Image (cartoon, rainbow, N blue to C red; front, side, top):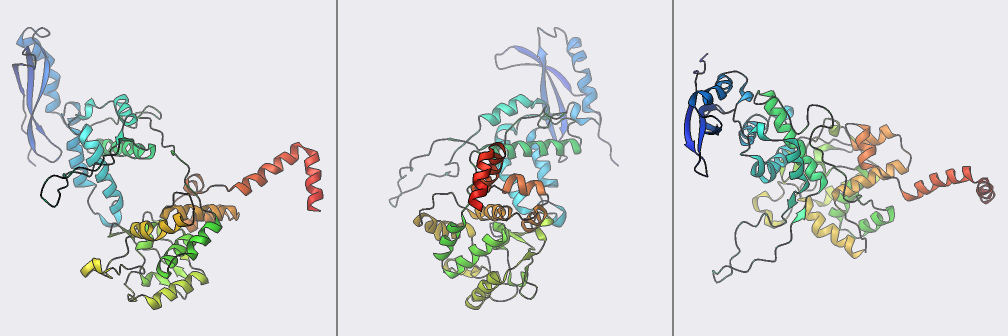
Length: 430
């Protein structure tokens, strides 16, 4: 095995931005990808170290560090170096043993848009907990960040840009995900010996970057009558698709990823084996997500009716295949874009019905959870139906108590404290 050549680095006098003489130290640094680059660091001013011997004593520990195995002691490794290494080792397709495509895609988005622009050139040792915390607190979102080129008119002249929306404060949930990804990067750096500290999580609980993940608003839950009204207004394809989501709680990617071979009409089960996100076929979110989903007779009849009408009936065909002529050669070979179905087929119906709630595909999964809880189903059954990895996720994040149930529970306490109300309640029930 070839050993690294020992180096002493170079100590020399230079001038800083204000033209004052300073001592500088330079050395050859090996990046995580094996590339050797020249690094330099200011030792101090000529006033601090009046002789070369004094400056030599100051860099003695640095010379030891650049030749030691403890590369984090004086490495000069930047966040960009760690991001590059993280991509090579973690953000590649490892099949069942790696991260899902949707997770890798989200990581890339946060790295490119938030973390690398601000912290990329910073050395790992220079990143401090309070500074990251303040940065997250002031983080804002530009709704126009995708506009990179100026639009042109038909005459070839630069057209007037549409009015740009004002900067918006990033949601607490997004800030938490950015914070968590930065912690993942530092843990990766620790694992590979690039540093020995994680300023994001801190050495003990509560000492790291504090960022609340509290929701800005409570997610909307639909009433049963509202769901019935929506279903009644939809065409067959959208009706089957939406009702299937309402009574199974399938995630959007799982709905898009259904093939006819996944539906067992004899056993009355749906086998969830894949998830499709942005037309990329991947595995399900967790191992628990791959458990079979029960199929009731009414939903089975709807699916069979759709099976008779759709031109795509082969076992490997998508249950909800794209049949638009604009799909070209991909017509029938890829699933529907469910975001498009929601935007152009379902939300207009919701608006026409006068339902003033923010409704997306995940709304139906949350509503399904809430209805199961309102029916007093066993919490383990609810968890299994939603295919969550833990009961805590089911009850703390998804389930919401409905007002009639909360009112009834409160009434029982009132009757305990006010005996006269208890007697009136008994007379009414009699």
